[in-house]
Amino acid sequence: MEVFTSTRARYGLGIATFLLLLTAATIAVIRLRVAPDLKQLESVVVNNRVDAIGVEITRKMTQIQSQSRAISQSAVLLGNPDVDRLLPGILDQYGDPHVFGGGIWPLPFQREANKERDSTFYARGDDSRFALNTHWNTSEALKYWEQPWHVAGQVAPQGQCIWAAAYQDDASPQPRTNCAMAIYRNGKLWGVSTIDLTLGFFNTLVAKAEEHIGGQILVLEGDGTIVSNSSLFKQDIVLKNVSTLGSQLPMAEAIDKLLHRLTSDREFESSYRSGGKDYTLFIQPIKDSPWYVATALPTTTLTASSERILHRLAMVQLPFAVILLLVMLYGIDLLMRQFALLKTNIDELSSGEADLTRRLAQGRGIEFNAIVDSFNRFIARLQGMLLEVQQSAIAIATASRQISGGNLDLSARTEEQAASLEETAASMEQLSITVRQNADHARHANGIAGQVAALTARNDENARHVMQTMQDIRDSSYHVAEITAMMDGIAFQTNLLSLNASVEAARAGNHGRGFAVVANEVRLLAQRSGAASKDIHRLIDESSERIEAGAGAVQEVGDLIAELQTRVSHMATSMSEIVTASEEQSMGIDQINHAVSQLDAMTQQNAALVEEATAAAKALQEQAGQLEHMVSGFKLA
Image (cartoon, rainbow, N blue to C red; front, side):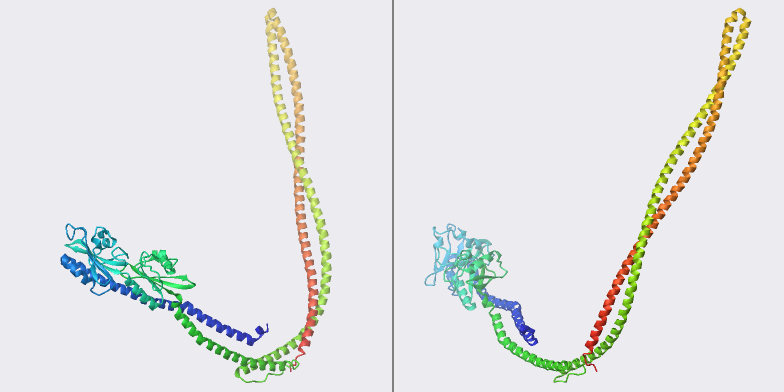
């Protein structure tokens, strides 16, 4: 919208908003900070006014307690007839119409030994005079010493009252309470004295206070029993409990919610809503009594002071805010006129074909002239800057033309270098393939050499086994030769023995012929055995010679196999070194090939960058021309 684009409208709206926010903040501070304090102050004022009820009740309690003390002392000091005559005068000592009556209530058989009921009770009659009431001494009446007020009086501290809970009995239709005080004779409890106070006393105090504060007041006991009527509630509610009046009296319902929290040394404040209006409830205890004063009044009564302050503040602040708004709007209007004049001068300056040699004229007002001076200094600075830009544009145009020409030459050389690197990369790729094939062949030959070395190792092991076998055979032949030599010796010895036997047989003559035949056979066998052992020995010698020759041949074969294995191992080691060198050479060539490829890619990128630089130089040349043309549109000198 056009309104929000206007500086005058924005400032006006901002000032108005600020004044509204200031007013709202003032109201909020009064409501959040001042109003609670004023409400608290009003609450204190109301409580002080209500305290008058408590003060009056306390004064009445003190008065009645002094009268009751006089009755108790008289009952101790005087005889029965004198006390009975004195009792009406003590009761009417202050002429208080709310003192309904009083009496002396001895314990059974204390006044006279043969009388169980012997009380003296005076009650105010219709003529407002005290008359003797003998109801409690009749047999139809309840036993007065068993009544709650009498029992409470029996345990009261000496010289002090115990105030009975509000009640209504057959002695009188008026609801009342009483002050019960113990009577002691010779240090022993003798009876109780009482003074009855009608609850109309509370009604009179409450009516006056309600008229004074404009609220509703109830006097009640701690259990919620109401001991006073309210002038604002037409029904009789004395001796009723607040818990039974919630539907008729909203104040009673609010009080009932606080009963369990009531204490004799603390005040309570609460709130409730009735008939569409908010009410504030105060409950405060009456000192040294069993009663509480509950006060309810419209919350607006407590906040009337703050509302009044807000009203008066609005009556003062709003006119001043309107005047301030008009003054500030007038000031903004004057400022906008100065800006309009400045705009007119700037339009005149800009309409002269960008003539930067012109300056704004001075106007009225120090602040306005300061802006004019600042603007003129800016134009002068702009003029100097554009002169420098003009000179720089010329220099840039010249340099860009030189850069463009150099980039064209560099682009051509870079393309040639890229072609050469591409051919080099192809050659390196072919060389890498060849070296990789050589490495594969060397790896295959290395495998074959390894297999040959393995076979040679196996043959060497077999040759060693053959040599060991030949050695075992030679050792066995040597052992056989020894055995045959031993057999040859045995045959020789046998031959000698057979000769000796033949000689002995010859000596024996005929008796030794048979023995001679045997000896001859033995000699023949010994000869054949000797001849056989010689043959065996000869064969074994020949076998040993042949075994020696075979062992030498096998040893020579083993040596040749060992030498062959050594040379095959050397060949396998060399082939492994060739494989390793071929692999390293292949890896080196791969790295060289990768580097050449990277160099080729970088060269291609450089060629592209050179082309881009050439294009940028051309664009820079064009932009320099445009800049020179634009600067020439300003009149600089």
